[in-house]
Structures are given as C-alpha cells and as structure tokens.
Image 1 (cartoon, rainbow, N blue to C red):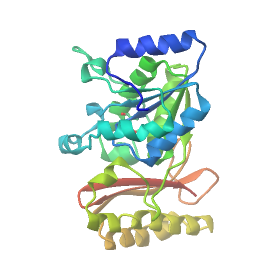
Image 2 (spheres, protein in one colour):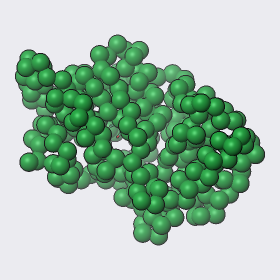
Image 3 (cartoon, rainbow, N blue to C red):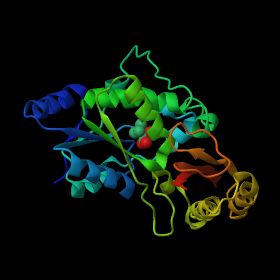
Length: 280
Ligand code: PAF
C-alpha cells in the first residue's frame, strides 16, 4: 500500500501525537526525493528499528548555492511514493514550502569548523541550509531516531554535531553507502548523467578503492594524490573539487592512514558534481 502523504505541519503533528500517545517510537528519514536504493535502505533500517517511520521529501532551496542546480534537481514525487511501498513506511511528509519557511522566517543555523572544508569550501552556504532545515524536520516530526546515509558523510557529522549542540532528543544513525554493481555510489544526481557520462562515472570509486589499498599499505597522500587525480581527469571528469584523506570524527586532514581515516572526493563529470567517500 502506498503510504499516506501529509503536506501540512498540523496534519503531521496530529499523526505523530497519536503515535507518541500510544507509546510508539518514531524514526525519520529526511530526503529531497528522487529516491534510489540508498534511500530505500535507510527506510528499511528505520522500519527495523522504530514502530513508526516517516520519510520526508523536501527540496530545500536554502542548501543550493547554485540556482541552476536547484532548478535541475529531479522531482519525482509519485515515483518516490511508489518506491517506498515495499519498505512499509507509515507516512510521507512532503511539506509545502511555507510549512518549513513561513513568511518572516529569519533563522540560520551554522555549524562551525566541520563545515569549512570539503563540500563546505566549494559550496558556500550549503551546510547552513542543511543545518537549518534538518533541526526543523527533527522538531516537526518529533522523531526519536533519524537515519542518514554515509554517502554524505560530512553532512552526517554536521547533523550529529548540531543535534548534540542543540540538545535535540534524537539519535542520529549513519547507514552504509549503497553502490551500483559497477561501484558508483547511488545518488539522486546520477539521474542527471547522460549514458556516456554514466559509463565514465564509476572511475571515481575505482580510483578511490586503489588509493585505499595504497594508503592501507602505508603510502602517503602526498605521494599518490597527483597520479590519482590524473586518472580521474583522464577518464573524462572535468574538475576535481577535492580528493582528501581525513579522520572520520572532526574531519581533520591526514597525510597517512590511521584508524577511522576516510578518503573523500568530489569531482565534476559533464556538469554533474559527484561525491564519494570510503573508510580506509
Ligand atoms: O541529504 C539530503 O537529501 C538533504 O541534504 C537533507 C538531509 C534531506 C536536508 O535537506
């Protein structure tokens, strides 16, 4: 059965209020729609852990620093609702924009430090947009658990930080990246790739996997990064925003691997920005 769609905060609160009164736990999976197997795996993880599951779909204008990117972002609500059928979620919350940003909305949440680097350095304002909408979704749904993919690892760390800093009573759970058979990390942006670009896209994950093996064997980033970047560019990517080794907590830069080290990349392929990260 397709889960009911709720578009108003009042309707959402009526539903979650009834669940809480019945002593049920609530899980939320925040998304911007264009759902793929990665999102569905989050919904399933929530289904296993919580009595009730809400998937939110809201293309948050505040986290797009590029108007074309916002305009081109895929919007596939009917399809999304159908895809969620198999996961058994209880409610899909698709708020009208004024339910999130009513007239006069004047608050921005900024998480310092964690947002200065990686995607924060190349997408100014992006994480302020994320850090502003996510607490709203947490508070509107009053969920006990929230599920985020490790694919957006920096986002996951930012969300953990803000939930702790703002004393939001929610447990943030990170779930593994889901990949296509050829290794490409699943992402709503993959829909924007042409057939030709789609064939080239897995090179990013391939190069990162080779780097992982080298780093694990003791190599230094300094010695391997240039050759890795050359391979990515030779495959047809036009630009690399970053290819960096960082620790998985505060995301501080590393030259050599250590426990909890992760490799992070963002690169452009025919106008589409792809990101990926793996544990080393
Ligand atoms: O990861 C996303 O889809 C978005 O950044 C999120 C967390 C739903 C906030 O808009």
